[in-house]
Structure formats: C-alpha cells, structure tokens
Amino acid sequence: MAKEITIHPDNTARQKFTALKQFMLETLAGGPISVLVRRPSRSREQEKLYHKLIAVISDQVTFETKHPDSDPGRIVYFFGRNRRRKYKPEIWKALLVDQFEQERALAGEPLRKPGQIVPAMDGSGRMVTVRPSTTGFSVAEGSEFIEFIYAQGIELGVKWPATAEEIAAAEREWIASNRGEAA
Image (tube, rainbow, N blue to C red):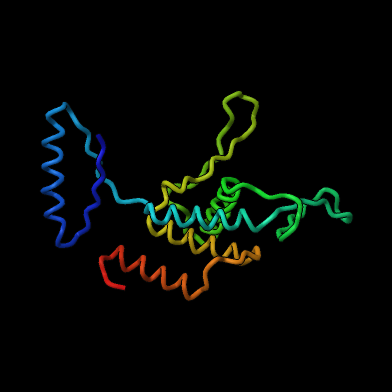
C-alpha cells in the first residue's frame, strides 16, 4: 500500500505528522516499510493542464517539411492550418519539451533534470536522444512549461478555447488554492 502526503510548513503540519506516524505504525504490522522524503515535483493539476494544452495544439496545428528549390539540402518547416501532416499529442509533447529545454538552457536556466544524448546499446555509434521527463519538473518548471506551451501555441496560430482574462483568472485561482489563500 502506498500513500503520499504533502506537508506544508503551516498550521496543519503537526496534524499531518501525527497522521503519517499513525499510518506508518499500522503499516509496520505487515512488515518493513520504506519512507521517501522529497520536495514535490510538478503537480497533478499542472500535468493535466499541459496535456490538455498539448491536445489543443495537436488538433489545430499541422506540420509540413519541404526542401526549398533554392537550397535542396535545407529543410524548412511550415506550421499552419490545412497543411500535410498532423502529429499526435505525444509527438507534440516531445517537440515542446525539447524546445522548452533548449530555451531554458540558452537563458542560462537549465532544467534540474535535463535530457541526455547517449550511445545506442548495439555499438553502432548511433546516438539516442532521451528527452527530459516532465515527471521530473519542479512545480516552478511545470508552471513555466505551461506558459511556454501557451506562447508556442500563439506563435503557431492556435486558437485557445479561453480568453486571456479567463486564463489569468484561472491561474490566479490555481496559485491561491495552492497557497491556501482565497482568490
């Protein structure tokens, strides 16, 4: 049985410690247990939101590659409506996470857990790119990734289902609820 408890440095910390102690004592009756203490990573709410945003991008944006006549060795990418190829959300997620990682690195603020390029196991000399996992994002990185997705969507011509005012109000409400404040 697994149980995750998030403890904030507030008035409820003592109550949560008491509940955690009781849970651990009850669980110990069944044998040894492991306890992991860590800072919270991005929230489940953040994860749900960026998956919804990525799905909107996937629905609205198509992708086309083309070799321009003037330089056949170069590939040009076109984004827009009614083009050739649509990508599934998991491909858009990989593209967006990669671009987010690159922009953070260029800004001198690399991700806490960046991606890697590693040699393939077959000894062929091929290199495999392993993108950073959004699971490893901090809460702040998750928030910045959401803002990044909105901005990328706007650049790609995405028509978000909400107005900027509704988005800002929802963000204020989300921030307040995570601080235990009223919006």
